[in-house]
Length: 289
Image (cartoon, rainbow, N blue to C red; front, side):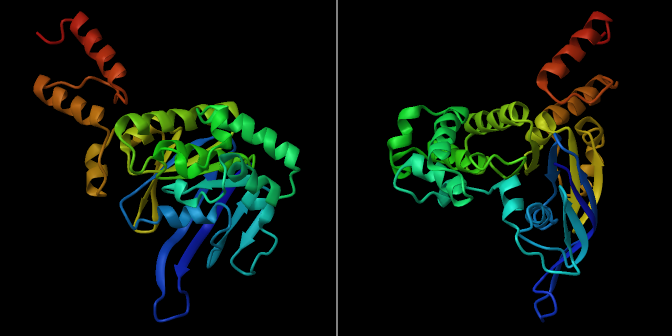
């Protein structure tokens, strides 16, 4: 399912003394199957865009095309339930949304609320608990008896139980240590491929944006500043720094090596493996002499 934002503007508390412009003139195309990262400093408009993707917010100007539905600023849309089913959002700390007495019931709640039979909801819970890297015996436990990492995976399974076509991730690794962050992001990428999802990642992690995204969107002061593939985006670290953003550590390390060597390595390397291979090739050609 494709999503398109056309000249979208959103004002919080519109037509009141507290009116605040959050985003403006946003044109953005999200084709089916893409893994897209939204980056930008705090207040740049990332989370506001995120909430337009399943009509939690409706634009104050412009329109949003979500599959065959049109969310227009000119009229208030109703019957948005189908959109919420097709576009699942994993918010920061999703484990805070757990509430049922067992893990199984928590995962089943969403699908059954949308009319799925109890038998089918149970089958989804049984499969999804394995998809998120947990064992089947956890289904009978209280979610509040689990570790923080396990609770987060259960909450993610609950979103996936709706069988969305689009998965929106709002800082999904917040509060996790480096190992936990890698495990969760690898899981999301695997599910992205296996379930043929469109995935939109809102993140402050330049490493995650570089590693997983097909395309990166830079937000700045409520507008789309730039859209490109990760290698193109991170090939201009000075530009990113001027926008208040950082670059992946490997890109910073490459810049330090190039400065020390007084020569360019060539392409911008996005992983330590790429950088190692590039340095080996230079060494073979006697480039360090």
